Image (cartoon, rainbow, N blue to C red; front, side, top):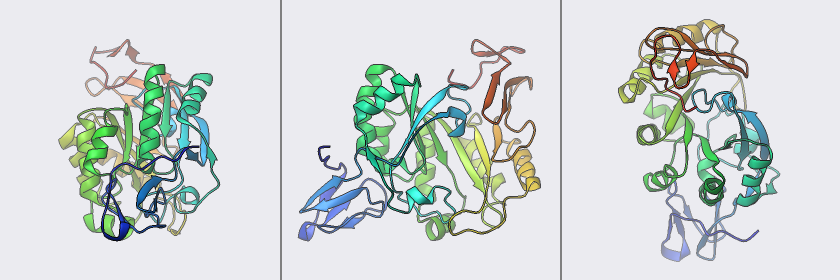
Length: 327
């Protein structure tokens, strides 16, 4: 595979490359790599050394992303880079996010051809952080557009503004992790920036379909759901919020989130947002979608089994309210 020069960088003194893709702005000396491993400085030229290198390739239910309001019930071709530009200590995919993993090459054309072969109307860049695959996503979009295939990202939202603007021209939907409402927690624990992620949510919500995931961790962020749901509601009450149950992974050995904590968070968030869901926990009714006006059940979900029961064309079958879905 041909080398792909990275975008969004500048050369400073002594051939040091400053990467401007994300707010870390890594200063990468010749022979060095950025924090995400995606970029390498070779004699004063910054290359996307992860270009077309994937750790994972699978056909998933789109609800697994999770995306509940974008083509519900469809399948999506999922593909992953190796690496991440944050360091969440509880990451469930740490073996491909924090460690250099075995990869195989795939071209943008091959990826789109696989989506057509498996009849998936969308491709998801997921599992590890897709922002670090900027060039590969951008090149894939050219072929995906020709074939009428949507591109989706599952992301931490930690990206500089100009590359984000480019992505919002080619991406159809995002699930964005909003991990905490504490700036200090973002900086010290996650090695990210809350305000940057909030900017991503705000800009993306005005242009494309977005959903937000919050992993609820006992003792870390389980008292923030009121603030988080109020914040999302201030942008748009129709943004779906997925409250996900935490389980121990990587460096975290805290016990899983109690079911009662999840139920309380669900009830609190529903005071402010139209669509709230519980993930990673079998709580009856907390994965279904209800009409905000008449409470008619629009979509029933059990695991990844999906039944669209209350939508007639693009309206609630009971009251006629236009539904907040991309169908």
